Image: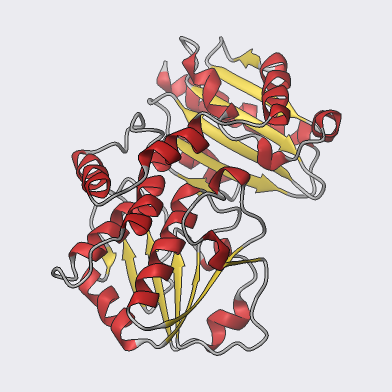
Length: 330
């Protein structure tokens, strides 16, 4: 895919020109969004810039190990809005960063760096590469564009490797390209702490999350000739274990291990909305399903949120749309 529409050199020009930066990734930051936010915060600080790093509304426990995490202002905007440059990372539209209108409206330059297939060119500088495995891959390429002036530190490499490894699903998703592997290898050579990354993200899970995972798998239903897996978690399910919807990492991917399952959905009842995570085994493009409901994502991993409807209504509407997709795969 072609980049939309500015080069990485244009991004560098914006970084050199700015003095006071506000950086944010998307709401409920994942490894890619948060890793990039931290790496860019560190880079700009090394460049002598003033940086305010922001994330909302909360950061998962599995990402608290990332170097520089203490520099992130979680859900807290500064009292004084005085930034000449805003950088949004992995935000396919401006709203993905949260309620940032006060910040966005006063900034002279808005830099948008993203890798989603469907992404708006809303910035003054837009670098959107839908062929990249992750935004972290793009940020590493940005370092390379410095012509040797800047190389990722071991801490920055740890943050960026976290972005690449999580967005590729430990290098098993279809976005695991030769470039993604090259970038990952380079980050390891630069000092990325892959032992800690693997141990914390993939081999550590709290008791409550394991119990919730058990409930989710127990409630899993196969529909549409066993081609569609549906898991519905209600508020009662979360309350039973003292868990939150944020503690469902990895659950939606598990049903795709079942032979014949093409699409997996995790449908969660939250206090003010119903949120849905989607995964594809490979043949179906779940980003199109998500877009139908106002969401987005990637061909193999996507999601959306719905307000004003019950979890049962959302589940049935989704099942009807999935039926059309599955029929085309036959």
